[in-house]
Length: 430
Image 1: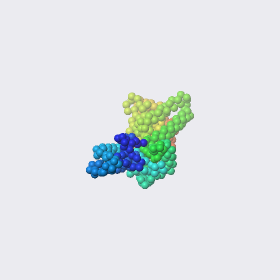
Image 2 (image 1 turned 90 degrees about the vertical axis):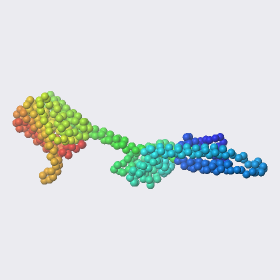
Image 3 (image 1 turned 90 degrees about the horizontal axis):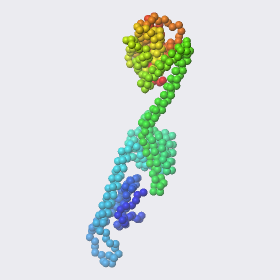
Image 4 (image 1 turned 45 degrees about the vertical axis):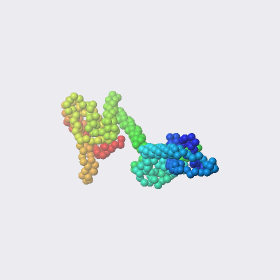
């Protein structure tokens, strides 16, 4: 509460100001509130009254009969009125400075600060709140035409949250909630705190709401939740792929040792593919990096053992895993039976992008063509049975991306040619 201050004997009676009496408010003990203009008007009126009394004190007094002088109060010296007027003017200047500082302080905040009546009617709004209102679309919570604060929130659930926060503040507690406002295509999120403004009797007489823009933090939280869901999805996919590789390897192996070697090699290929994806933040990876990663275990000191050429092509996570396994199978077979089993053997990998051709010449989709060709190795004998590697090469691309694969085994070296829609290979969904 405000306290009276000033020279001794200065006080204000409830009925009004008596001659020689004035009111002085301590601006340090009571910072400006909603009644600031009334206090300022009161001090201005006091200054005008003191100036009038000072003029009256300076005016020559008429000589009165002795009988009248005995009942009249002694005159107040003009110097006393001057002192009191200077004090009042100083207090008025302090009050103006304090209110100006508070106004600048509130104007510097981008928070939407509002003072409400107990029924939720908006009584005052900060400069930051008015700036937010000017930036937002009409019809949202920032619409100046809306006088009931809770009704300005666009969603019914948010209005209920606002009503609960108001009820908590009326009960002397603090209410808090988070809600969006603004255009649906680009809403802004607000962290809202509603607290009571206590009166002289300690009971809430008004309500204070402070809404802070937390849009960036909310988007970061949404992104984090999405990444967690994406990670769980990818882990499930990876485990399912490992399970399928293990089952197919054991089914096709001729011995436990052969199954162990094949399974370990395929797991390493998956690990290398994941390394490539991690470098691209699981968003995409370049085909050249996928080829290099698959061929790295088979590169030795022989010059130009493996040649790769083609344009830069960004692949989605699914395509990276599938092509890594396919290239791993081709390289493993080449190291066991084909070109990489001979010092003179070579492997050439080339890829091109065929531009989309409209019907009837094409189906309107851009296509990726990749060609694997071995040379310089021992004469190739076509396999007598279709193992897991061959099934992976021939089926996975077709099932996953709608492409086609052709495996050929001419005597001079094995060849593989694949073609798949570029858009399907670049799909980011894993």
